[in-house]
Length: 216
Image (cartoon, rainbow, N blue to C red; front, side, top):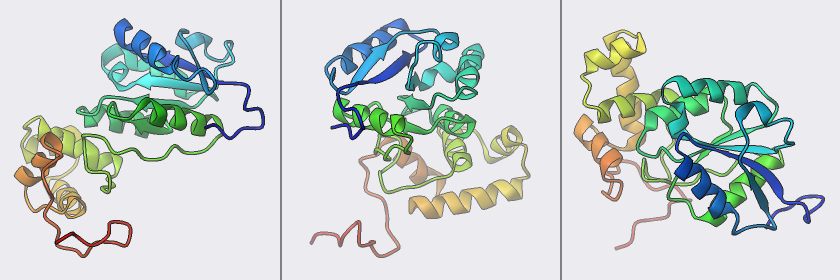
């Protein structure tokens, strides 16, 4: 699977999560791919000393005081790949804006996860993997993902504008752009994507060549 100069050496991955069961569960999952990756449980301040090549960081570690671990990690030369947190778009957006090189959803297969880790170890950006947060063909900015997360929490437009320190008119502009990218026209339709990703989106634009024409 891994395309490296020395395919006999597995990628050394530091697995970090707020909850021990998640941390050890991820390490156990990666143990099924010994030729490609080697999972290690090391503290944030030992990442470089342990010669780790990639940090796999669970997104829930961005909650509260533990975010200092993340900031410490992204300040090092070792790349950080986010995992999980699919229904906490605010955490994913915070991690990506804060320096993580990519995000792997919890719905990804172990093969997809390992492939992403190996890609990051080579110095490349990992492929985008569709998760339950949004359909796979939707691309939002970190700010738009943050706004969508606030919508999911039930905040009013005024409250969201205050959280983001922007004017109501600026927020309305962000919402219009976000709705257009999502292919929806209202808050309720946008939330249907966040909460029920299997709901078909209304499309006002023709399909791109990558999407193909809809079946009859």
